[in-house]
Image (cartoon, rainbow, N blue to C red):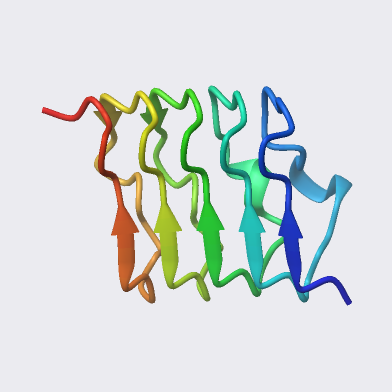
Amino acid sequence: NLVTLNLINNHLGEVPFKAQSIMLPALKELHLEDNKIKIIIPANFWGLPSLLVLSLDNNLITSIPADVFRGLHSLNKLSLSNNRISLLSNNSFAGLDNVTVLDLSMNKLT
């Protein structure tokens, strides 16, 4: 079972998972740093119930939609540093009850 998936610096324009097109029930770490991801949607993360670490640093993300991470109940580290995030919704981080590290540094939040 795949536990760590490293897709760093692959010029990805989007998260390569949507809804139930891929299920990785044992995945603990997903590294998507240094890509060209602009948009994230809830369906990107539905097949990852055991995920502990999600890193989306150094991408082009501008907003965090409501409920985008809902379902990632095991997640304890979420890193979104050095993006272009300027907009958060009231429920951007809904359902992330176990997150102990949230990095939003180097964005455009005011």
